Image (cartoon, rainbow, N blue to C red; front, side, top):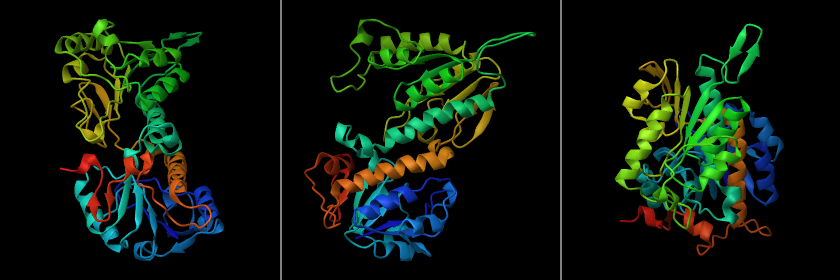
Length: 376
């Protein structure tokens, strides 16, 4: 069987779906690897490094994809790439099913069995394949580094002969994977960190990292999480109280990092323009939800701008700003996913559609949509 690694053609995408390390591992599964020339250029990997691990180098997308049984990508393939893929091919990538339904339809029409890595179920068996977590971890780290670079002061407290420099105050909104990494990074840089989240269980995680948890701690909040660990919808009264608390907290912050993102939906507004106006001149907001409308309506996707004296950082691909590490982790996630369905003895693909991971991430099969989120 042949695995294809085409170049990423999405504007601004610097990550790649395979590294020399994972090419070697894929070869160990009995697979042949074809890498499009220049695929690794953005992560400083020359074609010769892939060749040294047993990959063949193809001069263009057509030669890369024409005979491929499995295609690994970061972003969804374009129409021209889909047209080059053979019927029955398997595709694994970040397919953005909620916003790229036309692309998913074209994959179905082309007879490609496509798997959206975003849809991997959150079960222990899938942890090593969890691309959202691996990429969010880097995004949380990079958000703090970018904020520190844009901030016109030092992060830690410094005691000098000329006087003391006060530490920066950082508020992280959302304590998921990206938020927790942002907290840990800001703490390592010496900032005073606080964080907020709508899930009561995150309070202990936030405090274990040395940050202060900010929330209205009433009875409703204590019951604000389902048995599965998801947040419940809060009452209008609670939302108003929480908004007042956050508004008062934001006034005192130097850096705010927002991380609230709901797949397939517009990002919730966490920071209003009125809140921004109360922030100190020179403050920084890093909005990790910029690609889906932003947690602040003032955020401009893929721009760094200043509004009301506050610097907004709206990069839509923060992991791609650490392309080497992001690619390394993403490629390992994909290798672990491929290992799930490739027979170790024969090197053939055997998709078990009753497997929770296959069933949960599959979006097209035999020319049709198969994921519940895409039906109807």
